[in-house]
Length: 612
Ligand SMILES: Nc1ncnc2c1ncn2[C@@H]1O[C@H](COP(=O)(O)OP(=O)(O)O)[C@@H](O)[C@H]1O
Ligand SMILES: [Mg+2]
Image 1 (cartoon, rainbow, N blue to C red):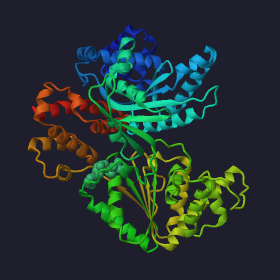
Image 2 (cartoon, helix red, strand yellow):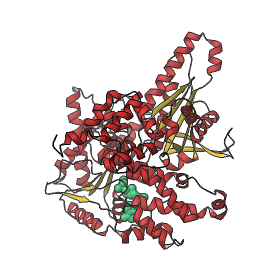
Image 3 (cartoon, helix red, strand yellow):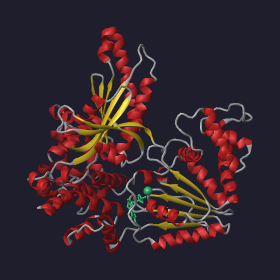
Image 4 (cartoon, helix red, strand yellow):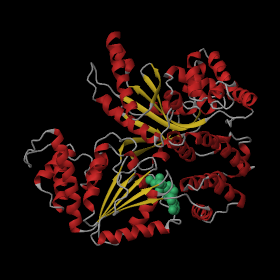
């Protein structure tokens, strides 16, 4: 074979190593696939579950491979170095990940077993487990283990989402509701406990005794204990989870609890229901915003587009940028600037959990606008809806469509709309556009549609129709999204694309100052933050807070933890951000994945350096 022939490289020594490695696992059947995908030994430590899935390795074998990779990181590194002369940049310590663990259990199963025969009880447990599986799958959780009538569930492993803690709590709440609605021989109730913490991935994916360890790890144990103190039909969450879900849920403070096997009392919270929040951004920023840094040009541009809208020239701004770059912060700054100007605000928020839920952002906007409250009867809700719609002189037929959209029964106040589904859908979308035009005729409208990379297809269609219409009415529509979304509307004369860039050194410095206030920070620490956060404001904030928190813990603790475990020194919120970013990379630019994985430990080393 001629030199440089790709085939020759593909079957070179490092590929032979892969074949040998697979053979030791008894999985030689995948050798060809690894070769086809140019996975040589140096790539092994960076393989994710998704990668293996993509090349068609079934679940059981993926687990085995990942476990083997994890256990053999060091030997793989030496092997690769020996064959290719290039050491892959592996993490030397095992990977630590933040996961949210949910533990749920069927209430009173012992009593049930005394009352009914084994056959019926088995059936009940199986119905219960199916119910858990449905709720968990809906939020992309992972059922790690069935333990009798208890179920151990992970959110954040194997697949991580930036909102795993929120997903876990939502799944818990839905599970409680679903179980209490089950029709079986007996009325069933469940209890749910949820906790977030760092775990070593090896503990999660190991087999045999390692897996048992995963179950008795600190976080799973805390989740199980919290489940134990939960009232029937309730969800109890740990403080660690609570700080990450901000104000997204209505919570009840259950005070400090002493739990078996856990040192010291722990604060526990009852999660009652999702809160009706105007904005995810605000719900997750409960302690207020730091002052705006930079973005003056961007803000000026938005204000210029706003004044065009005031002149009746409808405008659309496509605001794009990476996660954490400051899209929401910029829209918040605009809203603040316009508080004293009369206008109508319409805010829509797409959710990572509702990407398939038809018209979700639009329905939730209407529910908020109508101020539906918990416990409202259908009639009250209809009255409230009517009251808002009256303000925009909505015709009765459209009102009927909106009521239906909000799943409210027509109590006879509207004529029945008899239409085949397809036509009904068309009419509803038209009614939505008419609504916006009607509002704009009364006063200028500022519409903000956030996180459109998570939009459902029907909302996308509605948004498209809206964009077609607003060019001739007094509306400024701002659409925010991450770069993976490709908006089909760019290029029209009334559509402006605005990409938000990363911060430069000066801006990073200013943001650090805003976060630290008047607390001192050494020049070398500042420089480290500047270098390590890639100009992403979210990371600048989180890392600065992390350093401050750690310093605030004082000398006593510094000496107490003689050799702190590196990653444990990094607070949970920072891990969440890093995981989110990692996730982003996994779906986006794959080759940067390991870089961010690596950040976990160097960050710890770095913090250790700061304290020593
Ligand atoms: N220009 C800025 N000035 C001050 N803080 C900012 C700025 N941009 C972003 N931040 C902060 O960084 C974090 C991430 O910003 P956010 O607007 O939520 O990002 P995005 O919506 O693009 O994901 C927030 O806490 C936000 O307050
Ligand atoms: Mg945002």
